[in-house]
Amino acid sequence: MLWSSPRRGKHHAVLQPTRLSEALDGILRAAPADPIACRAVAPESAAPHLDRDWIAALAAAIGAAEVAVLVLRPHHGTIAARRVDALEHFDPADIAAARSYGRGQLALGAAGAAAEATLLVWLVARGRGGEKEVGSLAVVGTRGAVLSLALMLAPLPLRALMRVRALRVGLSTQSWGGWWGDMARSAALGGAFAATGAVIVAALMARYGEDWWKAAAAGSVGVAVVVTVAAPLVLDPIFNDFAPLGEGELRREVLALAERAGVSVGEVFEVDASRRTSAANAYVNGLGASRRVVLYDTLLSSFTPAEARSVVAHELAHVRYRDVPRLLVYLAAVAPAGTRAVAALAERLDDSAAPGLPALALAGATVSAALGVVTRQLSRAIERRADAFALALTGDADAFVSFEQRITRQNLADPDPPRWLSALFGTHPPIVERIGIAAAYRAGERPTPRSGLGRRSRRSPRTPADS
Image (cartoon, rainbow, N blue to C red; front, side, top):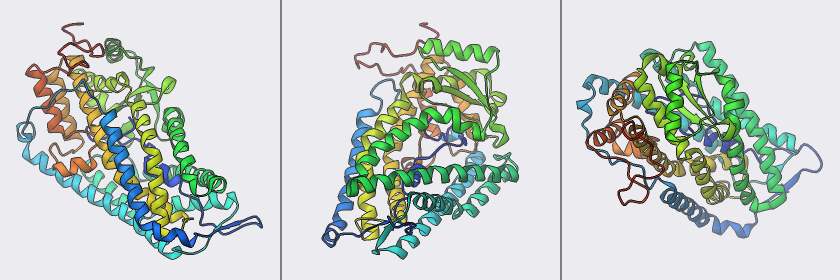
């Protein structure tokens, strides 16, 4: 999927939205390298409006995101969860260990984000209100790549400490040499994207002036589509090896589930996740011919066939309901207001109508963080429907619950985090809620029909009883 999965401990390398925004933020702070370098100075008349403009723009972006979530969230196919006590399904010691590990990682991750923000704030303060100069496109691209590398290096000690903690609890299986190799590949990819984005946005600014953000908003949607299509074929193989799932009972069952669900998955792949982690996972990504279901080798080796079927059924729901295109539509709906908010906040940070690269990067991170909280509402709603679909497709609530229990222990996940933590950072519902959905299914509840009149939706999966 396009989002991380705490349910199954997803660790595979993807291009995160914050990195894409960084790639588009390498723009103006470059020394002129040739005689055609141009100067851009903020008009004095613009300054009085900067304070209120960015607040209004950010509020508009958040409002647009909330409306998009209301429109695009599932309106059928869900099951209301029953209340479940975590202690009925998990040992108190396991819960305590998961919370200690997870919150420590969260604190280190937050400290890493603060390190990046501190670097950007310092760079913004150095150039605030000054005259901005744009050099050649080569210089602009270089500056974008350099900033991308600096933002990767700033939190690197904290990321290394997070890895040490993962090694101690057995979640990480990768050698330090392999980890540094991944860092190098990530740096190279991030630098290339940042340099390319910097050049493109610099060209947009030169062409459209203060209206550059309009073209950038449209371009961001195009980039997201291209990355979604290309990632399974071009980017993912840089970090992992993928092989079609071998002939056998599981492959036949996967294809049978797909047929009953009425979806075409293209291909089912196994990925060598065990080279990095002991955590298990599965996901769907790609569009059209590049769409695929991917199963971690740790999932295939550690879980029963019934549990694996439950996971596959969940992923098939994302294909059936076109959840990847749904998220791209959401991006298209939010991109104009979001990009306008980035431009307005960057102007305020830099006290200039022609903000420099650090201000744009800091504004992009700030707006992305605010919109991310709203976006995760949509993600959690999508995952709830996928759980209901999986239960209806397999008819096996016991396998669903046993998988949730085992994956929670294996991935050291907190089954019942505080509500505020789930609201801010949860891409999936808490584990206890997902078990509560299975409890409701056991009690006779079924996915809500499209019509709301009690008839089975024509998009509802066929359960073993009615297939």
